[in-house]
Image 1 (cartoon, rainbow, N blue to C red):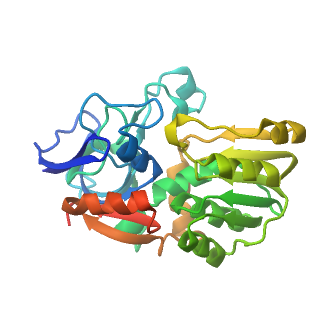
Image 2 (cartoon, helix red, strand yellow):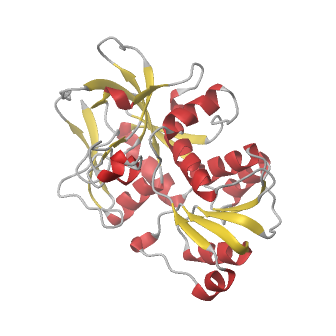
Image 3 (cartoon, rainbow, N blue to C red):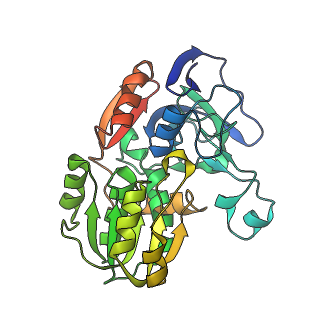
Amino acid sequence: MKALRLYGAGRLRVEDEPEPIPAHGEVVVRVDAVGLCGSDRHWFIEGGIGDATTARPLVLGHEIAATITAGPRAGERVAVDPADPCGRCAYCLRGLAHLCPEVRFAGHGATDGGLCTRLAWPERLLQPVPDGLADDAATLLEPLGVALHALDLGAVEPGDRAAVFGCGPLGLLVVQLLIRVGAEVFATDPVAHRLAVAHALGASATPFEVDVAFEVSGSDDALDAALELVRPAGRVVLVGIPDGDRTSFSASAARRKGLTLLLSRRMKSGDLERAIRLVERDEISLEGLVTERHALVAAEAAFASLVARSGIKIVIEPNA
């Protein structure tokens, strides 16, 4: 099979490798499409993400749409839940498996991800893709699950006023979810074409005081702006990943208002299934967010677009 490995910051290489051998409880899937996200951007630019590094070349990619190749479910199109928690620790047993310290996560640390033609992954983490949803759009089911978790942390109710700072794919999904629950939404992003999509979805271009803000860009400037916009006793949900693993902000504004800061990590167990149900009921649209599709051999061009933020969602199709 073919696999794309990251050998260090900015260094990618397509390699021929043995076919994967599934462990107990796993099946082999053909990887149809993989969405690139902000965490992949950090891995590519910095050679790591936060305090996570790898001792060997890593296959990135965790927003995976695939097809099961063998067994009773052969031929079934699936979305891959990239998190494989231990199921035994105190966090898993308390329903906080997304915080499991022993979690295996596709495309992170020592666990290879989906930028390859075949992947062995636990069958229980493969969720059926809705009929009619294209493979490239199906890569957005995982980030939709992440957006659902962020929305839950923000405790948004109908009639609330909310702001989204950062209108990449994840931010745009948060915008859609906020509008769906009946919130009034302001959105901002320095990239004009991304902001235009947020406005087309129904977000306001005019800022106003909000009950909750979602910082999805990983920018300190955006966080400071969010803190200024949120009302006293309001909430700020930090979703974006900052450069250099550091976030800083003006403490006086947050302290004076008595704000609550909530940090969002990935998605919780069950959020991928929730995302799929929303798409099945046509309550969220994923179509139109994919702006580029690349073959595995053209991955360098895909990552160049990711770094430049020249599109919305960039997808690699390993078997194209």
